Image (cartoon, rainbow, N blue to C red; front, side, top):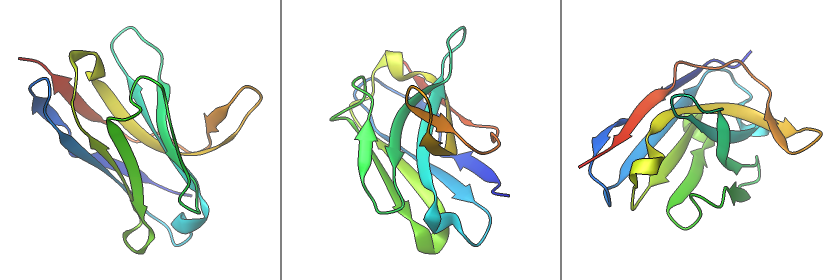
Length: 121
């Protein structure tokens, strides 16, 4: 069972950058597709980026061109580089393993605590 710990959040100004990290336990991290989700107060938790075990990536339209997901299998870690941040990016960010579901990609594992990102001037 994979355990996930997110870190790297904080307060940044609009237009700023932040890099999030997700550390996963276990010895088979490299076989999982991984995704970053975010949830703002009152909203549902939405998938914003994913990366397959082979390194293919996909992004939600709201973050495409600004965010980059990557992984380091030797460190059992997935990253989210966030550039040109906007106030609408304010949310708690979570990572999880992902797989195909009836209408799209769905989380497969247990949720960690997430990391808070606040974008404000």
